[in-house]
Image (cartoon, rainbow, N blue to C red; front, side):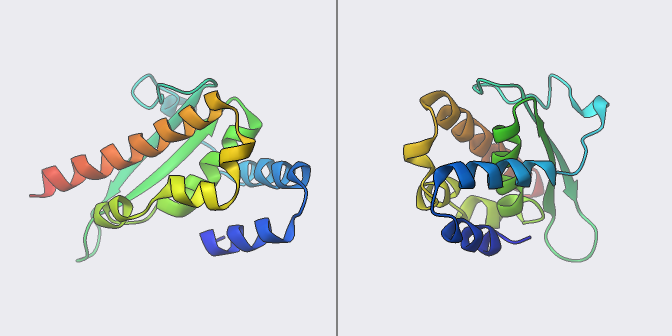
Length: 142
C-alpha cells in the first residue's frame, strides 16, 4: 500500500466513522513487532497510549542508507496512525524523511478536526521521533 492509495481510499469514505474503521484496519496490517522490541528505548514519549517505534538502518547496496521501522501500540486507532506514518516514512533515506511533512498529510486527511488533543500530541511525538532518527542517521553518515 502506498500513501497515495491511503489518500484515495480516504477520499472515498464520506463518514468519519467509516474513516476510523479504515484506520483501524490499516493498523491490523502492521507487521508484528517482536516482544523484545517493546523496550523502553523504542517507547515513544508524549503519547497517551503506549507506542513503540523500532528502527533499523539499512546500509545494503550502493545507495544511501534507508530507515525501516516496525511500530506497535496498545490502542487500535493509534496502530492505524502508525501504519500511515510507516507507509509514508519507512524505507526512505534520512533526507527524504526530513523533506516530508507528515503533519500536513494528516491535516489533508482531516485528522486535525477528528483527533483528540492527546492523540494529536502523540502523533507529533511519533513524527518527531522518526525525524530525530533521520537527523541522527545523517549526522553519523557525515
